[in-house]
Image (cartoon, rainbow, N blue to C red; front, side):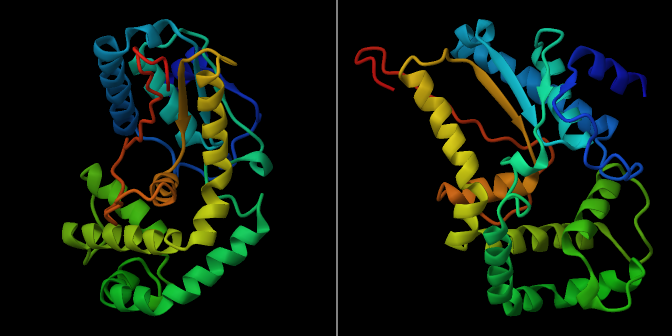
Length: 269
């Protein structure tokens, strides 16, 4: 679209030449409404910094995204709403070096730990999902309730509902809410396993800590680093930080803000 072309011209994607979902048709792309939500978030964040940290608005700004069309578009839309300088790139990495998601490709032990956690949670997940999946299965053309993919069903149905598009026969808004809550609960249970969250989010937390430490020791200037990732990234990151994650679905354009604060009197961070 013209809007997507304008964003690409203003905030070019840098790094990997082809997005991982390049052959996936229209599925998984950021909608116009989603782009507007991200622009609104960018504008709100700029207003926040104008009030509380105006020096950050003239400090270096970097943007990084997973190499997916919708997350790149998310970063670009945020930058547009934030009023970032034209030409600010959105950097992507090879999937083998990606740490913005729990990456089983880059860390095979993580895949083993996830399977172990899923097996341990299987009984609880089945008890929670049996009724809702028995309703979903015939509506989306799957013979067995056990074969209903929770995350995929949630993603498609929630998008349809959010855009007031027709839902499949027999599916109503309360069913959409229920599958979203079930998906969040299953992800939360998976990432409550210490080994899963250690391997899945450890690399990202290490990188964040190194970046903040470099600013605190004057090895690099302070600024704004934008990371565009996924709802599962936020779930895993909150679990890794021992936050009081409430097992609720992650809303569109949700964000986590991590700030490095300096004591003006003591000069300590």
